[in-house]
Amino acid sequence: MKSFLIGLGLGVGLGILFAPMSGEETRHNLTDRANDLASSARESYEHNRDRVQRGVQSIRGSAERAMGRARTAASEVTQATGTESPSPSSV
Image (cartoon, rainbow, N blue to C red; front, side, top):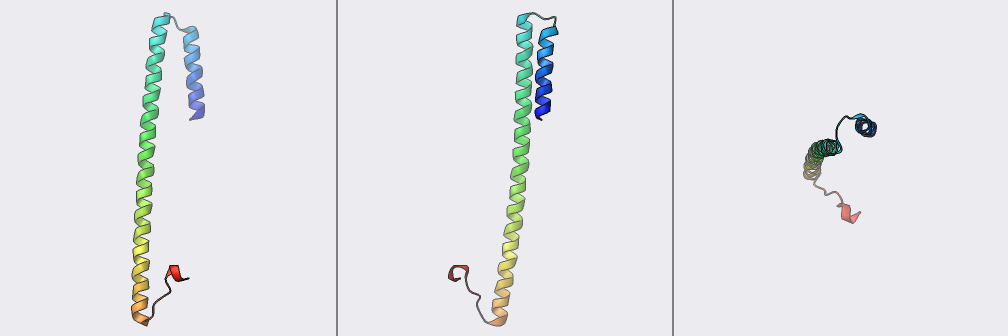
C-alpha cells in the first residue's frame, strides 16, 4: 500500500509539471483525485473493519461453544463420579 501511495504521489507530481491545464483546472483536478483517494481509503477501512468484526464474532462464538462443551463434560463427570471438582476460585 505504501508503494502505491508513493507511486500515486509521483504520478500526480509529474502530471502537474507536464499538464497543459491552467492553474484552476489543475487545482480542480487535484481536488477530485484527493477526494477519490479519500473515498477509496474510507471504503477500504470500512471493509477491513467489517472483516475483523466478523472474525472476532466467529472466534467468540467458537470459544463460547467450547466452554459450553467443557462445562457439560465436567458436569457429566461430576454426576457420574458423585464428586465435585474444585472450583477455580478455591485453587
